[in-house]
Image (cartoon, rainbow, N blue to C red; front, side, top):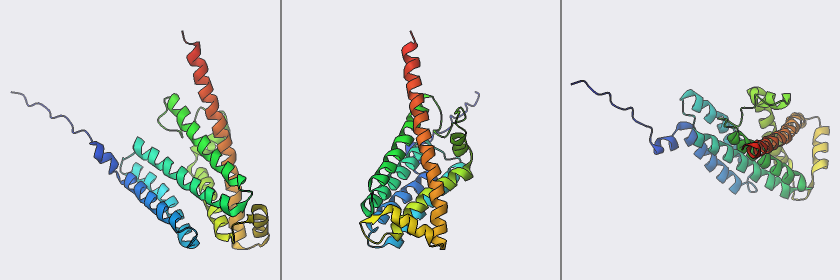
Length: 229
């Protein structure tokens, strides 16, 4: 009697939760929770923990590729953690600086652009929201197609937000005065702020492009859907 080949074991639901990059994602959440709990009592420790969580974002991506443990759950966990942690920091900055609308606007732009991009990618049947090869905007393609450029823009944003939080002295700081004064000092901090401000500005332009491109994709989907008999 011929031996029947045994079916390959399917990965269990729990095994995906225990992927190495996903475990790193859980650690990021714990780091952020503790960091924000002590943000006003220990600014330096908060900044160190927040930045460590941000670095772990790159580590979990490397682990996913290294150990072939990429997952939809991990991608969603990664983006949700990024968006919530950045949103929390922007809310804190909105309470420290005036006008607070600047940081609240950045928060709204960040969430709206990424949510629209995720949803439009889903409608287009793409495996990742980073698949923008069909975009007509060169800056948008460069951002998602070049990891070094994307990394610079993302790091610049987070470093700028952390630096602004560290140099704030009270809860009624004028944002423009603080930025201009810091840039005029000519210190290593002013150079860091200047470089970060440039990268952060590019990131916001890309967020606007991303939101408009994703909105156009959603509208195109609706148009084509209505044209079908």
